[in-house]
Length: 483
Ligand SMILES: [Mn+2]
Image (cartoon, rainbow, N blue to C red; front, side, top):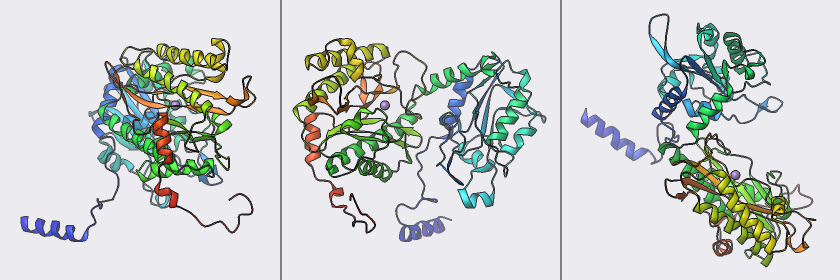
């Protein structure tokens, strides 16, 4: 036995490259124990005699018979780890008794294995896979939902999110999300005005998931730290690589290439890369300017790693040198951010954070002669100071005060569009500095340390060489104009 084992290991060492796992897949996913603990915590928040229902996000059409890359409902992912569509989770407050006398406290309905479908759209986990990999014991095919004998009328509260209203019924599938929701409505007697009906807890659903998801566990923090660090390495690499002749889209591509290089599956939101005046559009995602030129470049880009997304913004001069005006605006935003950082600890309210940053920006803008009254500041700083991050880039939360192990963004900004009522020299300057912060009891940890934010550090990094400087592609034969 031992000898055979030795021979097997030795031959593997000789023939197997170091990266070969069985399937060569990432292994740092959230564990079944994590998901089980989340379901248990949900159960603790639920009132007596209640059931919570969580369904998968719908598949969305991209073009003709092509769908968008599927993204799971973060709540369902949080409670199960299941990443496939057309699925439904039930979590019961009290153990339920099956016909054979056995008890269960949750049920997951998943996509049925289907060789033909899997040839086209990839492997499905199926019932056995979900039991094995996700550690749930009560897993069924979606088509079994209609035959379940759960008596929903006996529950005092059915806790659920707002139902999706625009689902299409796939003719080839009698257990898609459309069918699951239709059957749920029938079984639980969900009428059109369910949101006003106290028997259905749509407010409770948001309250409980917010309460749970706003506090990150160690497992979650590991993934979140990684997502943030990946995003920061993207920012740092782009600072080195950026040149005035690049397009906004090219810069976007560099960020996302770095993310992918580190194994991030998606971006957590459409990447925002805006040069000059485009930076004034808060959620600018066209990224269509052909040359970033010698402008300030605002880059709000976040990698999503195993479901958790970062949210990091850096604003840099593409020439490597801030002009006097750019510097004045940048320093003001920086100062507002630093002041907010100092309040990052347990017990601080969002209002307190917002006030301190807004004050500094208002006073600064007056000093620079851009506005004359404090109230005018909102014109150039038209958004809130920050938000939670996690499985959603604007993550679920339920508390008004900061608590230990929350992760939030601190992102003051100043945006002065062309033709604003101030000296022309300020026009088309847009600066946002956005960092990701872990709240601790007495202070905070800056998770996004790896992307420089000081003026001197940024100028130094933009001057550095990048391996991407030598990534030069042939001119396209088909191109007439532009590149
Ligand atoms: Mn943000």
